[in-house]
Image (cartoon, rainbow, N blue to C red; front, top):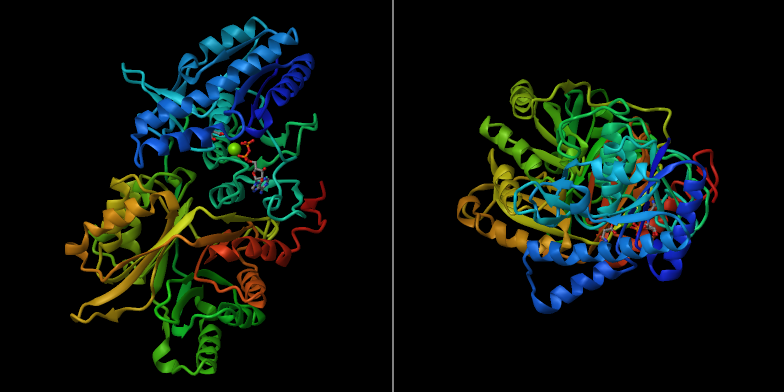
Length: 598
Ligand code: ADP
Ligand code: ASP
Ligand code: MG
Protein backbone atom coordinates (compact mmCIF):
# COMPACT_ATOMS: atom_id res chain seq x y z
CA UNK A 1 0.00 0.00 0.00
CA UNK A 2 1.28 3.45 -0.89
CA UNK A 3 2.35 5.58 2.06
CA UNK A 4 2.26 9.37 2.07
CA UNK A 5 3.49 11.78 4.71
CA UNK A 6 1.40 14.94 5.00
CA UNK A 7 2.53 17.89 7.07
CA UNK A 8 0.12 20.56 8.28
CA UNK A 9 1.54 23.90 9.43
CA UNK A 10 0.45 26.17 12.25
CA UNK A 11 -2.16 28.15 10.32
CA UNK A 12 -3.69 24.95 8.96
CA UNK A 13 -4.39 23.74 12.52
CA UNK A 14 -4.90 27.27 13.92
CA UNK A 15 -8.28 26.57 15.57
CA UNK A 16 -10.58 23.63 16.20
CA UNK A 17 -12.63 24.26 13.05
CA UNK A 18 -9.48 24.05 10.96
CA UNK A 19 -8.36 20.94 12.80
CA UNK A 20 -11.69 19.31 11.93
CA UNK A 21 -11.29 20.36 8.29
CA UNK A 22 -7.76 18.94 8.20
CA UNK A 23 -9.07 15.67 9.69
CA UNK A 24 -11.55 15.43 6.82
CA UNK A 25 -8.84 16.09 4.29
CA UNK A 26 -6.71 13.33 5.80
CA UNK A 27 -9.63 10.94 5.80
CA UNK A 28 -10.15 11.61 2.07
CA UNK A 29 -6.57 10.55 1.43
CA UNK A 30 -7.04 7.38 3.49
CA UNK A 31 -10.14 6.59 1.44
CA UNK A 32 -8.08 6.64 -1.74
CA UNK A 33 -6.39 3.53 -0.35
CA UNK A 34 -3.22 5.06 1.06
CA UNK A 35 -1.55 4.85 4.42
CA UNK A 36 -1.06 8.29 5.93
CA UNK A 37 1.44 9.57 8.45
CA UNK A 38 0.66 13.13 9.47
CA UNK A 39 3.12 15.62 10.93
CA UNK A 40 1.71 18.73 12.59
CA UNK A 41 3.04 22.02 13.89
CA UNK A 42 1.83 23.83 16.97
CA UNK A 43 -1.51 25.65 16.57
CA UNK A 44 -1.35 29.08 14.95
CA UNK A 45 1.10 31.36 16.64
CA UNK A 46 1.36 29.29 19.80
CA UNK A 47 5.12 28.73 19.48
CA UNK A 48 5.59 32.52 19.33
CA UNK A 49 3.43 32.87 22.43
CA UNK A 50 5.54 30.33 24.30
CA UNK A 51 8.69 32.19 23.26
CA UNK A 52 7.30 35.45 24.62
CA UNK A 53 6.32 33.79 27.90
CA UNK A 54 9.91 32.69 28.30
CA UNK A 55 11.15 36.17 27.48
CA UNK A 56 8.96 37.63 30.20
CA UNK A 57 10.94 35.55 32.65
CA UNK A 58 14.44 35.55 31.24
CA UNK A 59 16.35 37.54 28.63
CA UNK A 60 18.53 34.54 28.00
CA UNK A 61 16.67 31.34 28.90
CA UNK A 62 18.60 28.09 28.72
CA UNK A 63 18.21 26.26 25.44
CA UNK A 64 17.29 23.07 27.23
CA UNK A 65 14.35 24.70 29.01
CA UNK A 66 13.28 26.38 25.77
CA UNK A 67 13.08 22.95 24.13
CA UNK A 68 11.09 21.63 27.06
CA UNK A 69 8.70 24.56 26.65
CA UNK A 70 8.37 24.73 22.88
CA UNK A 71 7.90 21.03 22.37
CA UNK A 72 4.59 21.29 24.26
CA UNK A 73 3.03 23.28 21.39
CA UNK A 74 3.03 20.34 19.00
CA UNK A 75 1.76 17.99 21.70
CA UNK A 76 -1.48 19.99 21.84
CA UNK A 77 -2.12 19.83 18.12
CA UNK A 78 -1.36 16.12 17.65
CA UNK A 79 -3.83 15.20 20.40
CA UNK A 80 -6.59 17.43 19.02
CA UNK A 81 -6.07 16.23 15.45
CA UNK A 82 -6.20 12.58 16.52
CA UNK A 83 -9.43 13.26 18.40
CA UNK A 84 -10.88 14.94 15.33
CA UNK A 85 -9.96 11.92 13.19
CA UNK A 86 -11.44 9.52 15.72
CA UNK A 87 -14.58 11.64 15.80
CA UNK A 88 -14.92 11.01 12.05
CA UNK A 89 -14.63 7.29 12.69
CA UNK A 90 -11.06 7.18 11.45
CA UNK A 91 -8.71 5.21 13.70
CA UNK A 92 -5.77 7.42 14.64
CA UNK A 93 -3.08 7.77 17.25
CA UNK A 94 -0.90 10.71 18.23
CA UNK A 95 2.78 10.23 19.03
CA UNK A 96 5.40 12.68 20.26
CA UNK A 97 8.86 12.75 18.72
CA UNK A 98 10.15 10.80 21.71
CA UNK A 99 7.47 8.13 21.41
CA UNK A 100 8.27 7.60 17.75
CA UNK A 101 12.00 7.63 18.36
CA UNK A 102 13.05 10.68 16.33
CA UNK A 103 16.62 10.63 17.51
CA UNK A 104 18.59 13.86 17.22
CA UNK A 105 21.92 15.34 18.17
CA UNK A 106 22.07 16.83 21.63
CA UNK A 107 22.19 20.39 20.27
CA UNK A 108 19.24 22.06 21.98
CA UNK A 109 17.14 24.43 19.85
CA UNK A 110 18.78 23.45 16.58
CA UNK A 111 19.20 19.69 16.71
CA UNK A 112 19.70 17.69 13.55
CA UNK A 113 17.93 14.39 13.08
CA UNK A 114 20.21 11.37 13.24
CA UNK A 115 17.78 8.53 12.91
CA UNK A 116 14.08 7.76 13.05
CA UNK A 117 12.83 4.49 14.45
CA UNK A 118 10.00 3.19 12.33
CA UNK A 119 8.74 0.11 14.23
CA UNK A 120 6.11 1.80 16.31
CA UNK A 121 4.69 3.80 13.40
CA UNK A 122 4.65 0.70 11.19
CA UNK A 123 2.73 -1.23 13.83
CA UNK A 124 -0.01 1.40 13.98
CA UNK A 125 -0.16 1.75 10.21
CA UNK A 126 -0.63 -1.98 9.87
CA UNK A 127 -3.62 -1.67 12.17
CA UNK A 128 -5.15 0.81 9.76
CA UNK A 129 -4.50 3.81 11.98
CA UNK A 130 -3.46 7.26 10.86
CA UNK A 131 -0.35 8.15 12.83
CA UNK A 132 -0.17 11.80 13.87
CA UNK A 133 3.38 12.77 14.79
CA UNK A 134 4.52 15.94 16.54
CA UNK A 135 6.78 17.93 14.24
CA UNK A 136 9.78 20.04 15.22
CA UNK A 137 10.81 17.82 18.14
CA UNK A 138 13.03 14.88 18.86
CA UNK A 139 14.92 13.13 21.58
CA UNK A 140 18.59 12.60 22.22
CA UNK A 141 20.24 9.22 21.94
CA UNK A 142 21.71 9.49 25.43
CA UNK A 143 20.23 7.62 28.37
CA UNK A 144 18.81 10.90 29.68
CA UNK A 145 16.37 11.07 26.77
CA UNK A 146 16.47 14.84 26.55
CA UNK A 147 13.84 16.65 24.49
CA UNK A 148 15.24 18.63 21.59
CA UNK A 149 13.78 20.86 18.90
CA UNK A 150 15.00 21.27 15.36
CA UNK A 151 14.85 25.06 15.00
CA UNK A 152 11.96 27.33 14.05
CA UNK A 153 9.99 26.06 11.10
CA UNK A 154 11.45 22.60 11.66
CA UNK A 155 8.24 20.59 11.26
CA UNK A 156 8.88 20.52 7.51
CA UNK A 157 12.16 18.81 8.27
CA UNK A 158 10.47 16.29 10.58
CA UNK A 159 8.03 15.45 7.79
CA UNK A 160 10.61 14.89 5.06
CA UNK A 161 12.85 12.92 7.41
CA UNK A 162 9.92 10.68 8.37
CA UNK A 163 9.05 10.21 4.71
CA UNK A 164 12.60 9.07 4.01
CA UNK A 165 12.76 6.77 7.04
CA UNK A 166 9.40 5.18 6.19
CA UNK A 167 10.26 5.04 2.48
CA UNK A 168 7.07 6.91 1.69
CA UNK A 169 6.01 7.54 -1.89
CA UNK A 170 6.14 11.29 -1.27
CA UNK A 171 5.97 14.07 1.26
CA UNK A 172 3.29 16.74 0.99
CA UNK A 173 3.74 20.02 2.85
CA UNK A 174 0.18 21.29 3.32
CA UNK A 175 0.02 24.98 4.15
CA UNK A 176 -1.81 28.26 3.60
CA UNK A 177 -0.56 28.85 0.05
CA UNK A 178 -1.27 26.65 -3.00
CA UNK A 179 2.38 25.85 -3.67
CA UNK A 180 5.76 27.43 -4.02
CA UNK A 181 5.33 30.88 -5.46
CA UNK A 182 7.73 33.28 -7.13
CA UNK A 183 7.84 35.22 -3.87
CA UNK A 184 5.91 35.75 -0.65
CA UNK A 185 2.31 36.54 -1.65
CA UNK A 186 1.78 38.44 1.59
CA UNK A 187 4.27 41.03 0.38
CA UNK A 188 3.78 40.80 -3.37
CA UNK A 189 0.16 39.99 -4.22
CA UNK A 190 0.84 39.03 -7.84
CA UNK A 191 3.29 36.25 -6.89
CA UNK A 192 2.74 33.30 -9.20
CA UNK A 193 2.74 29.58 -8.61
CA UNK A 194 5.90 27.89 -9.82
CA UNK A 195 5.49 24.84 -11.99
CA UNK A 196 8.89 23.53 -11.04
CA UNK A 197 11.90 24.53 -9.03
CA UNK A 198 15.21 22.76 -8.69
CA UNK A 199 16.43 21.62 -5.31
CA UNK A 200 19.38 24.01 -5.48
CA UNK A 201 17.13 26.97 -6.22
CA UNK A 202 14.71 25.99 -3.48
CA UNK A 203 17.54 25.65 -1.00
CA UNK A 204 18.72 29.16 -1.76
CA UNK A 205 15.20 30.59 -1.65
CA UNK A 206 14.43 28.83 1.63
CA UNK A 207 17.63 29.99 3.26
CA UNK A 208 17.18 33.54 1.94
CA UNK A 209 13.84 34.02 3.65
CA UNK A 210 11.14 32.14 1.69
CA UNK A 211 9.80 30.40 4.74
CA UNK A 212 7.39 28.18 2.86
CA UNK A 213 9.91 25.34 3.27
CA UNK A 214 12.53 24.80 5.95
CA UNK A 215 15.88 24.63 4.14
CA UNK A 216 16.86 21.41 5.89
CA UNK A 217 13.68 19.76 4.61
CA UNK A 218 14.82 20.57 1.09
CA UNK A 219 18.28 19.27 1.92
CA UNK A 220 16.97 15.89 3.04
CA UNK A 221 14.58 15.62 0.10
CA UNK A 222 17.45 16.36 -2.23
CA UNK A 223 19.89 14.00 -0.57
CA UNK A 224 17.48 11.09 -0.59
CA UNK A 225 15.55 11.87 -3.77
CA UNK A 226 12.28 12.14 -1.83
CA UNK A 227 9.51 13.70 -3.95
CA UNK A 228 8.40 16.85 -2.15
CA UNK A 229 5.36 18.96 -2.93
CA UNK A 230 3.78 22.02 -1.34
CA UNK A 231 0.00 22.26 -1.49
CA UNK A 232 -2.92 24.04 0.08
CA UNK A 233 -4.51 22.61 3.22
CA UNK A 234 -7.86 23.98 2.15
CA UNK A 235 -8.27 22.18 -1.16
CA UNK A 236 -7.63 18.68 -2.40
CA UNK A 237 -5.44 19.91 -5.18
CA UNK A 238 -2.14 18.04 -4.78
CA UNK A 239 -0.02 21.04 -5.86
CA UNK A 240 2.69 20.94 -8.49
CA UNK A 241 5.77 18.81 -7.94
CA UNK A 242 8.49 21.08 -6.86
CA UNK A 243 11.79 19.74 -5.86
CA UNK A 244 13.50 17.98 -8.71
CA UNK A 245 17.02 16.89 -9.52
CA UNK A 246 18.00 14.78 -6.52
CA UNK A 247 21.72 14.41 -6.10
CA UNK A 248 21.44 10.83 -4.89
CA UNK A 249 19.33 8.02 -6.19
CA UNK A 250 15.88 7.80 -4.74
CA UNK A 251 15.88 5.62 -1.66
CA UNK A 252 19.63 5.89 -1.17
CA UNK A 253 20.60 5.26 2.41
CA UNK A 254 23.32 7.05 4.28
CA UNK A 255 24.41 6.63 7.85
CA UNK A 256 22.44 9.56 9.24
CA UNK A 257 19.39 11.35 7.97
CA UNK A 258 20.68 14.86 8.44
CA UNK A 259 24.31 14.41 9.23
CA UNK A 260 25.43 13.23 5.88
CA UNK A 261 28.35 15.17 4.51
CA UNK A 262 28.26 18.93 4.96
CA UNK A 263 30.34 19.63 1.89
CA UNK A 264 29.43 17.86 -1.35
CA UNK A 265 32.02 19.42 -3.58
CA UNK A 266 35.06 21.59 -3.78
CA UNK A 267 34.96 23.84 -6.80
CA UNK A 268 37.47 26.15 -8.39
CA UNK A 269 37.73 28.61 -11.20
CA UNK A 270 41.02 30.04 -12.39
CA UNK A 271 39.61 31.65 -15.50
CA UNK A 272 38.38 34.74 -13.72
CA UNK A 273 40.01 38.10 -13.12
CA UNK A 274 39.08 40.67 -10.56
CA UNK A 275 38.28 44.33 -11.01
CA UNK A 276 37.90 46.60 -8.01
CA UNK A 277 36.65 50.14 -7.90
CA UNK A 278 37.67 51.99 -4.79
CA UNK A 279 36.15 55.01 -3.12
CA UNK A 280 33.12 55.43 -5.33
CA UNK A 281 30.12 57.37 -4.04
CA UNK A 282 27.71 55.45 -1.79
CA UNK A 283 24.45 56.51 -3.38
CA UNK A 284 21.55 54.93 -5.26
CA UNK A 285 22.29 54.22 -8.89
CA UNK A 286 26.01 53.56 -8.71
CA UNK A 287 25.88 49.77 -8.99
CA UNK A 288 23.14 50.06 -11.56
CA UNK A 289 25.18 52.32 -13.84
CA UNK A 290 28.34 50.28 -13.49
CA UNK A 291 26.81 46.86 -14.06
CA UNK A 292 24.35 48.23 -16.61
CA UNK A 293 27.25 49.40 -18.78
CA UNK A 294 29.04 46.09 -18.29
CA UNK A 295 25.92 44.13 -19.28
CA UNK A 296 25.44 46.29 -22.36
CA UNK A 297 28.87 45.13 -23.48
CA UNK A 298 27.75 41.56 -22.96
CA UNK A 299 30.33 40.89 -20.31
CA UNK A 300 29.19 38.30 -17.77
CA UNK A 301 29.98 39.14 -14.18
CA UNK A 302 30.35 36.22 -11.82
CA UNK A 303 31.05 37.31 -8.28
CA UNK A 304 30.09 40.79 -7.10
CA UNK A 305 31.03 42.03 -3.70
CA UNK A 306 30.20 45.44 -2.34
CA UNK A 307 31.20 45.84 1.23
CA UNK A 308 30.33 48.41 3.84
CA UNK A 309 30.75 52.06 3.15
CA UNK A 310 33.13 54.42 4.86
CA UNK A 311 31.68 57.85 5.17
CA UNK A 312 29.95 58.28 1.84
CA UNK A 313 32.35 56.15 -0.14
CA UNK A 314 32.23 52.54 -1.08
CA UNK A 315 34.24 49.84 -2.83
CA UNK A 316 32.83 47.39 -5.34
CA UNK A 317 34.74 44.39 -6.61
CA UNK A 318 33.66 41.88 -9.20
CA UNK A 319 35.04 39.07 -11.24
CA UNK A 320 34.79 38.53 -14.98
CA UNK A 321 36.26 35.99 -17.34
CA UNK A 322 39.94 36.72 -18.01
CA UNK A 323 39.08 37.08 -21.70
CA UNK A 324 36.78 40.00 -20.84
CA UNK A 325 39.17 41.78 -18.57
CA UNK A 326 40.28 44.48 -21.01
CA UNK A 327 36.73 45.54 -21.70
CA UNK A 328 35.76 45.41 -18.04
CA UNK A 329 38.83 47.43 -17.10
CA UNK A 330 38.02 50.13 -19.65
CA UNK A 331 34.43 50.36 -18.42
CA UNK A 332 35.58 50.61 -14.81
CA UNK A 333 38.04 53.39 -15.67
CA UNK A 334 35.42 55.35 -17.60
CA UNK A 335 33.04 54.93 -14.71
CA UNK A 336 35.57 56.05 -12.15
CA UNK A 337 36.44 59.16 -14.17
CA UNK A 338 32.76 60.00 -14.51
CA UNK A 339 32.51 60.19 -10.73
CA UNK A 340 35.52 62.48 -10.56
CA UNK A 341 37.93 59.76 -9.42
CA UNK A 342 41.45 59.02 -10.53
CA UNK A 343 41.37 55.72 -12.47
CA UNK A 344 45.07 55.14 -11.95
CA UNK A 345 44.54 54.98 -8.20
CA UNK A 346 41.00 53.85 -7.83
CA UNK A 347 40.64 51.03 -10.31
CA UNK A 348 42.53 47.86 -9.54
CA UNK A 349 42.73 44.90 -11.85
CA UNK A 350 44.06 41.58 -10.70
CA UNK A 351 44.38 38.84 -13.28
CA UNK A 352 46.24 36.51 -11.00
CA UNK A 353 43.32 35.34 -8.94
CA UNK A 354 41.53 32.05 -8.52
CA UNK A 355 38.23 31.28 -6.85
CA UNK A 356 37.91 28.25 -4.59
CA UNK A 357 34.58 27.26 -3.13
CA UNK A 358 33.07 24.61 -0.92
CA UNK A 359 29.47 23.74 -1.67
CA UNK A 360 26.82 21.63 0.00
CA UNK A 361 23.42 21.90 1.59
CA UNK A 362 24.90 20.62 4.83
CA UNK A 363 26.65 23.96 5.32
CA UNK A 364 23.29 25.40 6.38
CA UNK A 365 23.19 26.04 10.09
CA UNK A 366 26.66 24.63 10.66
CA UNK A 367 28.76 27.67 11.43
CA UNK A 368 31.87 25.58 11.84
CA UNK A 369 32.14 24.66 8.17
CA UNK A 370 33.00 28.08 6.74
CA UNK A 371 35.33 28.63 9.69
CA UNK A 372 36.99 25.31 8.90
CA UNK A 373 37.57 26.41 5.32
CA UNK A 374 39.14 29.69 6.46
CA UNK A 375 41.27 27.87 9.01
CA UNK A 376 42.44 25.37 6.42
CA UNK A 377 43.48 28.16 4.08
CA UNK A 378 44.98 30.24 6.89
CA UNK A 379 47.03 27.32 8.22
CA UNK A 380 48.42 26.83 4.72
CA UNK A 381 49.39 30.50 4.78
CA UNK A 382 47.00 31.40 2.01
CA UNK A 383 45.62 34.92 2.22
CA UNK A 384 41.94 35.30 1.36
CA UNK A 385 41.39 38.39 -0.79
CA UNK A 386 37.64 38.28 -1.08
CA UNK A 387 34.94 36.14 0.48
CA UNK A 388 31.38 35.69 -0.69
CA UNK A 389 29.05 33.22 0.92
CA UNK A 390 25.57 31.90 0.69
CA UNK A 391 24.15 29.34 3.08
CA UNK A 392 25.06 26.56 0.70
CA UNK A 393 28.38 27.81 -0.62
CA UNK A 394 31.48 29.61 0.59
CA UNK A 395 33.66 31.15 -2.13
CA UNK A 396 37.08 32.67 -1.53
CA UNK A 397 39.18 34.64 -3.95
CA UNK A 398 42.86 33.84 -3.49
CA UNK A 399 46.08 34.36 -5.38
CA UNK A 400 46.32 32.09 -8.40
CA UNK A 401 49.68 30.95 -7.12
CA UNK A 402 48.01 29.41 -4.12
CA UNK A 403 45.36 27.49 -6.05
CA UNK A 404 46.99 24.07 -6.14
CA UNK A 405 47.90 24.27 -2.50
CA UNK A 406 44.39 25.45 -1.60
CA UNK A 407 42.73 22.60 -3.47
CA UNK A 408 45.01 20.08 -1.85
CA UNK A 409 44.40 21.23 1.71
CA UNK A 410 40.66 21.67 1.18
CA UNK A 411 40.34 18.20 -0.31
CA UNK A 412 42.11 16.81 2.76
CA UNK A 413 39.99 18.74 5.23
CA UNK A 414 36.64 17.97 3.67
CA UNK A 415 37.48 14.58 2.12
CA UNK A 416 35.47 15.65 -0.88
CA UNK A 417 36.03 15.32 -4.60
CA UNK A 418 36.86 18.24 -6.79
CA UNK A 419 34.21 19.51 -9.17
CA UNK A 420 35.51 21.58 -12.02
CA UNK A 421 35.16 24.03 -13.55
CA UNK A 422 33.19 26.22 -11.16
CA UNK A 423 31.05 27.60 -13.93
CA UNK A 424 28.25 25.31 -15.05
CA UNK A 425 25.73 27.30 -17.06
CA UNK A 426 22.30 25.69 -17.03
CA UNK A 427 20.78 27.31 -20.08
CA UNK A 428 17.53 25.41 -19.76
CA UNK A 429 16.59 27.11 -16.53
CA UNK A 430 15.18 30.62 -16.25
CA UNK A 431 17.68 33.26 -15.13
CA UNK A 432 15.49 34.20 -12.20
CA UNK A 433 12.92 31.87 -10.73
CA UNK A 434 11.97 33.60 -7.54
CA UNK A 435 12.69 36.40 -5.09
CA UNK A 436 12.93 36.42 -1.32
CA UNK A 437 13.13 38.91 1.51
CA UNK A 438 14.72 38.37 4.89
CA UNK A 439 13.92 40.99 7.48
CA UNK A 440 15.36 39.19 10.43
CA UNK A 441 18.97 39.89 9.75
CA UNK A 442 21.55 42.21 11.20
CA UNK A 443 24.85 43.28 9.76
CA UNK A 444 28.10 43.39 11.66
CA UNK A 445 31.17 45.15 10.33
CA UNK A 446 34.60 44.86 11.87
CA UNK A 447 36.72 47.73 10.69
CA UNK A 448 40.46 47.87 10.13
CA UNK A 449 41.29 44.24 10.79
CA UNK A 450 44.93 43.38 10.08
CA UNK A 451 45.23 41.95 6.58
CA UNK A 452 46.97 38.64 7.08
CA UNK A 453 46.33 34.97 6.53
CA UNK A 454 44.13 33.42 9.19
CA UNK A 455 42.05 36.45 10.15
CA UNK A 456 38.78 35.17 8.72
CA UNK A 457 39.49 31.85 10.42
CA UNK A 458 39.78 33.55 13.80
CA UNK A 459 36.66 35.67 13.41
CA UNK A 460 34.40 32.96 12.06
CA UNK A 461 35.99 30.32 14.26
CA UNK A 462 35.05 32.37 17.33
CA UNK A 463 31.49 32.70 16.07
CA UNK A 464 31.28 28.99 15.30
CA UNK A 465 32.43 28.17 18.80
CA UNK A 466 29.48 30.14 20.06
CA UNK A 467 27.27 28.30 17.62
CA UNK A 468 26.47 31.42 15.63
CA UNK A 469 25.76 30.93 11.95
CA UNK A 470 26.46 33.76 9.58
CA UNK A 471 24.89 34.16 6.16
CA UNK A 472 26.62 36.54 3.84
CA UNK A 473 30.24 37.28 4.56
CA UNK A 474 31.99 40.02 2.72
CA UNK A 475 35.55 41.03 3.09
CA UNK A 476 36.35 44.47 1.80
CA UNK A 477 38.44 44.99 -1.17
CA UNK A 478 40.58 47.85 -0.14
CA UNK A 479 43.58 47.56 2.09
CA UNK A 480 44.18 50.61 4.22
CA UNK A 481 47.00 51.67 6.46
CA UNK A 482 45.69 52.13 9.93
CA UNK A 483 46.97 54.94 12.13
CA UNK A 484 49.47 52.54 13.66
CA UNK A 485 50.78 51.59 10.22
CA UNK A 486 49.15 48.16 9.85
CA UNK A 487 47.74 47.01 6.53
CA UNK A 488 44.04 46.45 7.24
CA UNK A 489 40.74 45.44 5.70
CA UNK A 490 37.15 45.52 6.84
CA UNK A 491 35.09 42.37 7.22
CA UNK A 492 31.31 42.52 7.17
CA UNK A 493 28.73 39.80 7.44
CA UNK A 494 25.03 39.31 8.02
CA UNK A 495 23.49 36.99 10.55
CA UNK A 496 20.21 36.34 12.37
CA UNK A 497 19.32 39.48 14.29
CA UNK A 498 18.77 37.45 17.45
CA UNK A 499 22.46 36.50 17.40
CA UNK A 500 23.87 39.99 16.81
CA UNK A 501 24.72 40.79 20.41
CA UNK A 502 26.26 37.43 21.11
CA UNK A 503 28.32 37.70 17.93
CA UNK A 504 29.54 41.15 18.78
CA UNK A 505 30.57 39.95 22.24
CA UNK A 506 32.40 36.95 20.79
CA UNK A 507 34.37 39.15 18.39
CA UNK A 508 35.16 41.66 21.12
CA UNK A 509 37.22 38.95 22.82
CA UNK A 510 39.50 38.85 19.75
CA UNK A 511 40.46 42.51 20.01
CA UNK A 512 43.91 41.92 21.43
CA UNK A 513 44.75 39.40 18.70
CA UNK A 514 43.25 41.15 15.68
CA UNK A 515 43.59 44.78 16.74
CA UNK A 516 40.59 45.93 14.77
CA UNK A 517 39.26 49.43 15.17
CA UNK A 518 35.61 48.89 15.97
CA UNK A 519 32.61 46.59 15.65
CA UNK A 520 29.56 48.17 14.05
CA UNK A 521 26.19 46.47 14.44
CA UNK A 522 23.27 47.49 12.23
CA UNK A 523 19.95 45.78 12.86
CA UNK A 524 17.90 47.98 10.57
CA UNK A 525 18.63 46.04 7.41
CA UNK A 526 16.82 43.75 5.02
CA UNK A 527 18.20 41.27 2.53
CA UNK A 528 16.53 41.01 -0.87
CA UNK A 529 17.59 38.21 -3.17
CA UNK A 530 16.76 36.79 -6.56
CA UNK A 531 17.49 33.15 -7.35
CA UNK A 532 17.66 31.22 -10.60
CA UNK A 533 19.71 28.31 -11.87
CA UNK A 534 19.97 29.89 -15.33
CA UNK A 535 21.60 33.06 -14.03
CA UNK A 536 25.12 31.96 -14.75
CA UNK A 537 26.22 32.84 -18.23
CA UNK A 538 23.41 35.36 -18.72
CA UNK A 539 24.87 38.85 -18.48
CA UNK A 540 22.77 41.55 -16.99
CA UNK A 541 20.80 39.82 -14.24
CA UNK A 542 22.48 41.77 -11.45
CA UNK A 543 22.38 44.96 -13.51
CA UNK A 544 18.63 44.64 -13.98
CA UNK A 545 18.10 44.28 -10.25
CA UNK A 546 20.34 47.23 -9.42
CA UNK A 547 18.56 49.36 -12.00
CA UNK A 548 15.18 48.65 -10.44
CA UNK A 549 16.48 49.72 -7.04
CA UNK A 550 18.21 52.76 -8.44
CA UNK A 551 15.08 54.02 -10.17
CA UNK A 552 13.30 53.86 -6.85
CA UNK A 553 16.23 55.62 -5.15
CA UNK A 554 16.91 52.65 -2.93
CA UNK A 555 20.51 52.59 -1.78
CA UNK A 556 22.25 49.20 -1.85
CA UNK A 557 24.40 48.84 1.24
CA UNK A 558 26.06 45.55 0.47
CA UNK A 559 26.01 43.16 -2.49
CA UNK A 560 26.86 39.49 -2.56
CA UNK A 561 26.36 37.04 -5.37
CA UNK A 562 26.84 33.37 -5.99
CA UNK A 563 26.28 31.47 -9.21
CA UNK A 564 22.54 31.17 -8.76
CA UNK A 565 21.60 34.22 -6.73
CA UNK A 566 22.13 37.95 -6.22
CA UNK A 567 21.54 39.39 -2.75
CA UNK A 568 21.43 43.05 -1.78
CA UNK A 569 21.36 44.49 1.69
CA UNK A 570 19.15 47.56 1.89
CA UNK A 571 17.68 49.62 4.72
CA UNK A 572 14.99 47.70 6.55
CA UNK A 573 12.41 50.32 5.62
CA UNK A 574 13.16 49.71 1.91
CA UNK A 575 12.87 45.91 2.18
CA UNK A 576 9.25 45.28 1.16
CA UNK A 577 9.44 47.81 -1.67
CA UNK A 578 12.71 46.34 -2.91
CA UNK A 579 11.18 42.85 -2.99
CA UNK A 580 8.26 44.11 -5.11
CA UNK A 581 10.68 45.83 -7.47
CA UNK A 582 12.85 42.73 -7.79
CA UNK A 583 9.79 40.61 -8.54
CA UNK A 584 8.56 43.05 -11.17
CA UNK A 585 12.01 43.57 -12.72
CA UNK A 586 12.10 39.93 -13.81
CA UNK A 587 8.43 39.87 -14.78
CA UNK A 588 7.78 37.14 -12.25
CA UNK A 589 4.24 38.36 -11.76
CA UNK A 590 3.23 37.75 -15.35
CA UNK A 591 2.33 34.42 -16.88
CA UNK A 592 5.26 32.83 -18.59
CA UNK A 593 5.86 29.13 -19.15
CA UNK A 594 7.64 28.99 -15.79
CA UNK A 595 5.05 30.97 -13.92
CA UNK A 596 1.57 29.64 -14.21
CA UNK A 597 -1.07 31.84 -12.61
CA UNK A 598 -2.80 30.40 -9.57
P1 ADP B 1 3.30 26.70 7.93
O1 ADP B 1 2.80 27.26 9.22
O2 ADP B 1 2.27 25.94 7.18
O3 ADP B 1 4.59 25.97 8.08
P2 ADP B 1 4.70 29.03 7.02
O4 ADP B 1 4.11 30.31 7.50
O5 ADP B 1 5.90 28.50 7.70
O6 ADP B 1 3.54 27.96 7.00
O7 ADP B 1 5.04 29.13 5.46
C1 ADP B 1 4.01 29.53 4.54
C2 ADP B 1 4.15 31.01 4.25
O8 ADP B 1 5.38 31.23 3.58
C3 ADP B 1 3.12 31.55 3.29
O9 ADP B 1 1.96 31.94 3.97
C4 ADP B 1 3.84 32.73 2.64
O10 ADP B 1 3.45 33.94 3.24
C5 ADP B 1 5.29 32.50 2.95
N1 ADP B 1 6.16 32.48 1.76
C6 ADP B 1 7.33 33.16 1.66
N2 ADP B 1 7.89 32.96 0.47
C7 ADP B 1 7.07 32.12 -0.21
C8 ADP B 1 7.14 31.52 -1.49
N3 ADP B 1 8.17 31.75 -2.32
N4 ADP B 1 6.16 30.71 -1.86
C9 ADP B 1 5.12 30.47 -1.04
N5 ADP B 1 4.99 31.00 0.19
C10 ADP B 1 5.97 31.82 0.61
N1 ASP C 1 6.04 25.19 15.76
C1 ASP C 1 7.38 25.39 15.31
C2 ASP C 1 7.58 26.85 14.92
O1 ASP C 1 6.68 27.65 15.03
C3 ASP C 1 7.74 24.47 14.18
C4 ASP C 1 7.00 24.68 12.88
O2 ASP C 1 5.95 25.28 12.84
O3 ASP C 1 7.47 24.17 11.87
O4 ASP C 1 8.66 27.21 14.54
MG1 MG D 1 6.63 26.58 8.23
